[in-house]
Picture (tube, rainbow, N blue to C red):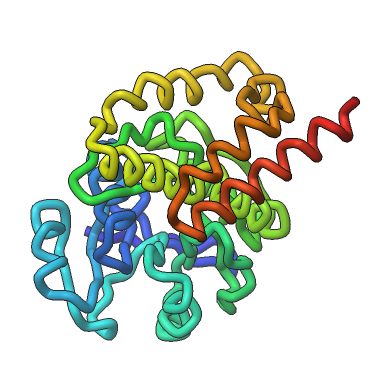
Length: 270
């Protein structure tokens, strides 16, 4: 049962005293959010919208589902967990909705949404299908056009995570760049390392303790202080030898560019 509460000109829908949610999207993020919200006593996912009938199947145990935008149910918050290029056109279809409309993108400004009640709900984590995530430790950045909407997002985020941050679009979009460096780019370097190991018939597992130690070390040291390796020492002979081992020209360029960046960084600190 949905109850419509009026506060001056503002309207929000409350589902039996809980925050009611409609999720738009059927990908990895939407599924992880749906799972997290389903465990919260303060949140009710009343519906999930998606264009892929097969993908929606996995949401049926959590909420009603629909393939039709015009059949969306009333809710206090509409969460757009979709690709960046789908946010604006999808949000335009929600202009008549009275709830708060938010997107989940790190690199998109809040004002791509033209609703009076608009905001951002950005979980800063990597989400992969069938890989469970402990949402209680996932940092969530929130932003809203109106103060009361930000309070609502604060309540929503706090219901599933202990790490909630108020981050405006200008800072969040730069945070997203930082996240690409520490996650997407680093993972690509893992893939290059794995490829070298496979080529030499060496198990990639031999590098995993090093990967774990590197990630764990920056919990107590800044990355700058934790840096090691031939570029940090400006060991030209070792770097030249490494380059001779690399057959892939792109890998050579990546090695040279990163090494030059490290060398320059520590030369400037001298």
